[in-house]
Amino acid sequence: MNYSELRKEMVETQLIPRGISDKRVLEAFLNVPRHAFVPDKEKENAYNDFPLPIGNAQTISQPYIVALMTESLGLSGTEKVLEIGTGSGYQTAILAEIVKEVYSIERIPALAEKAERLLKELGYLNIHIISTDGTLGWEEKAPFDRIIITAASSQIPEPLIKQLKDNGKLILPLGTSLSQILTLVEKKKESIETLQICGCTFVPLIGKYGITTQ
Ligand code: SAM
Image (cartoon, rainbow, N blue to C red):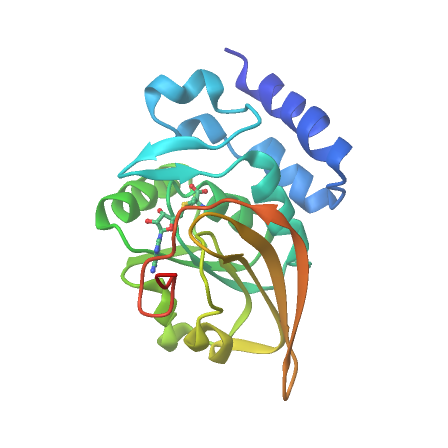
């Protein structure tokens, strides 16, 4: 299979026509070998327009949603980013192609270890991964310019708002465990502003400040 051709096709048919236009984001999608982040039996589907299972009842998100979340963060390249929900590590790699440092937290140790190994093999030196409850953030490394939460939450985790810089941005799927709205949160000195982007469906953010039963 010619994966580099498939990546080009993914960018040209799934991302650009839906409005993804940031050159750094498109470049990252052309560079990162998405097929390396999915199980062997899913490799032929790696560049298709849907999420895929990655084991441990978790998923790698649809390419367009990864691109939309990345573009919505308005990255210039100098940022320190915190990601909650490493999963396969694909979104982590996309971010690492664009920004200075990526700190990523995964709740399931087996996924965190697998992603860390793969990202090292692929040569990323600006990624740091730990396994714990990401809704508590990563206090010692704070503050962050941007925060991305790649699992569904019914609340904006308070520790993460605290660990975000002033004028920083955080993106998350906000809603119930059944459906959410991709929401961009901007932190201002005294307040936060939110912008609703589109409907989406993610696996739940399980943690102290994550999804609550409703
Ligand atoms: N961005 C990932 C990728 O590119 O493969 C997909 C992430 S998957 C949709 C959501 C991930 O969030 C799962 O791996 C899940 O274990 C993780 N997760 C859920 N609750 C979490 C928490 N409190 N802290 C850290 N990770 C969490």
